[in-house]
Amino acid sequence: MQLPIYLDHAATTPVRPEVIEAMMPYFTEAYGNPSTLYSVGMSAREAVEDAREAIAETLNATPEEIVFTSGGTEANNSAIRGIAEYAGKGHLITTNFEHHAVLDPMEKLEHEGFALTVLPVDREGMVTAQQVADAIRPDTILVSVMHANNEIGTIQPIAEIGALCRERGIVFHTDAVQTFGKLPLDVREQKIDLLSISGHKLYAPKGVGALYVRRGTRLSRFMEGGQQEKGRRGGTLNVPGIVGLGKATLIAREEMASEATRLTALREIFLSQLLSAIPDLKVNGSRTHRLPYNLNLCFPGVEGESVLLALDAMGICAAAGSACTTGSVKPSHVLTAIGLSSDEARSALRLTLGKSTDGGAVEYAAEQIRQIVQGLRSLGQRKQPASV
Image (cartoon, rainbow, N blue to C red; front, side):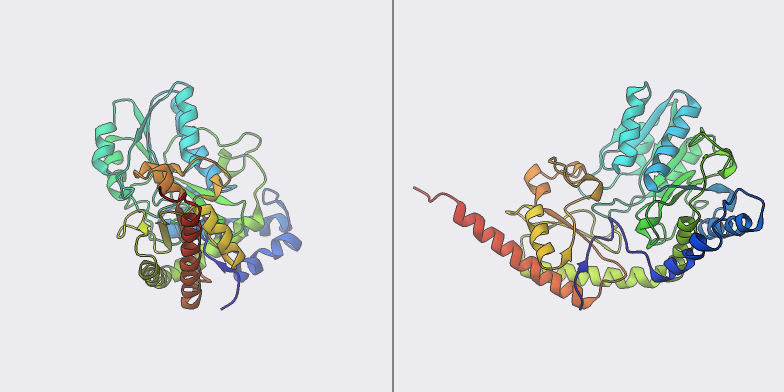
């Protein structure tokens, strides 16, 4: 076992050596602008199209339906604002535990005059197709429901929601940042119109992502300033990053089934060890409809951030919630959405496994968490005033 032990793969992943190797020529040799017509540029363009094809095949899409972005946040914003701006007015539907890259643009559009319905999730973090059906109005133009939650790992019934939206003629968007390359996705079968991807969740570099746009879906241009990406998004393409995303996609597709099985087994071992050592901990989210690599737990009587700091001192990286909200004094909106109190939400820890996680890492982390939680609880009890 080697330190540090990284248990925050939902926040970001290290770039795999094979991905770095695939990217390197596009920094030094095939460095041309892919929009040019000479050979150095054409080599870059060819590599971009290879990556586009790899992503399309993984989604059962066509290459023309893949648009490269700077990451998941841009993909989400482009999907939501693109549909809204093209329509000019209408009704939007989402859930109350989406990533802020969905919630924030939705709320901004509401301030601009669009109607917005934010559906509640249940205590496991699930929303149903029936809830969506009940919320649809004659002027509904977009439904956005994430495939799996970035904090508690709950997997949503997107195929059912997609079928409902297709039947009603409503555009369906899903944030698949946590699931692309990790769970099977089929945009045809699941009736998805727009789907967001981020490279750095997939052992590709930061700063690159993609948006699947179903053929015929009408939305405004992402960015003005050029005719790149068939006029959808102006700007010179990040060729090395796109190549890296393509390579990471090919690797993930090959390893998806075996890695899901391995991580699910490791996650259950990890949870079993923690439950044995800390019997009053609480698992947040669904135990069955859950990402293979995700554990989100409450440790009553301690602050999650105190546990994080102590774990860091022991060479373990974890999270108290989404990396995008680190530093916020508010409890996680995801955890309060599933009914946790502020104190419960602040006692939570997110542990997300990945390629580097093995049995030794899980055993070491479980023991360190046990010691830290017991120590913090003992310290808290000593600080309590004596009863009269």
